[in-house]
Length: 611
Image (cartoon, rainbow, N blue to C red):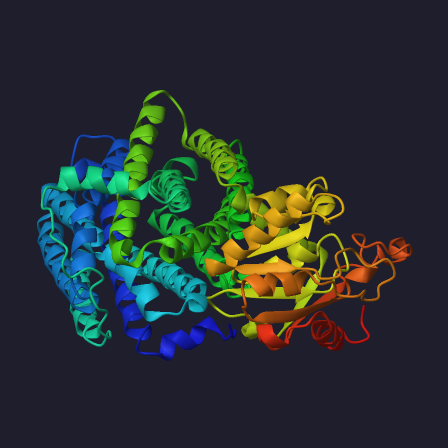
């Protein structure tokens, strides 16, 4: 469980060429789309009699419709065939789309341009399942957040660069449109060449029989997603972000033109600000999450999306402020990165590897449904008389309602948010030896018991979920009981109080270890009354008699001076901001040698003199 910089992945063949291909693809898409959007926004009358607002949302719907129609088939293809070859094929399809778009630009033909946009959506629908399913095959679990963060960051930079380049290019008098046509085809050709360097990624299910009925397979895929409730709800969360983003980004051209009375360049600046924010938020995810899939960032992200969405409404109403609007868009992008990266990593980790591409294809289908819904709702709200700022306010308020609904269904998100906030707003946690906690397989974690939040601190530091065994009275502590119930902690009572409950606890511990889980216990059996370690009781011995697994000793330091300990002088330390806390992890001890006395001595040595 070592922690290294995510940027090293860019220099490794298992990630670097793939990153380059997806970067060029995102860049190329946005060169084409930005050129098209600006032409439609500022030269609408030359193409059609439709209003500019309607045309923008029709174009958005046309691009995402193929995700709904073809993602299910694309997921089957990605599970059946080797993925690096599929990436080369999809980039070749992109070249064909750009060639058609080039003809449309040169002839100023709206049908050809919209056809190229639709086919570009088809190509993206084929690429999506391969793009996200190849990452878990090439990266370790501890690298997934960093890898996804780099992909999202790279996509944001590519979008930014594509918007700038496409917007600048199409505005050049005389040769701009020809420049767009030639550039997009050249970039696709470069992507094909780079794709040949991607290492082979074996098929997940080579015996799969592909169903070519897109409607039937789409329905089957949507039903399949519901098999894993957490994955399904995470996909709904991802799709909601696409809805939120589509509602905002699609309005940028008319926001710049009608609200700010700006030129084509302001459209680019708005999109650049949003993209910078997403890239920064995606990169920060790995640092803030401690190189693990930190679900606590998801509620944090949704809070920012709501608050800065409301402020964006204020910034674009009354006397509109360009500077404030740009700041809000950067902030929305940052919190969007916090929101989306952990959700993508969670879907990749918790999906069955044999069906991962189809799960991601299902995600793309739901994304498409939400984006088409965004375009439809936007058109309906505009027809009802809403302005663009009012549309932004409605979107921000809807985000708050959807977030509350999802977190009520999956308390794990809120629980991780509580834990994450504890470590990042109350304490400064220093971690030593975390790589000694195994990435998989059963083990018992033993630690000294200093405060009521010991389990929260350790859970925040550890990538793997831990089933905590704890005194039934602490299990019932208000507020903390939410955390303990959500992580399915195992309450335990002394034999003299409830021998049946004690036996049920030991049976539950044995089942969890047999299933390969981590069990966490505090062998002292109670909180320390004086900061010193008490005697380790024999409960760990009884656990190991039923399930002889390795024991990982751990020691917490610094919490004795916290408000959550039984320290009578703790109020003297309350004014200290961000007190330091240390979690030290020792070498695993074999079950045969894991006596209470040996474990006590090991934990005491790990703790040292610092309480």
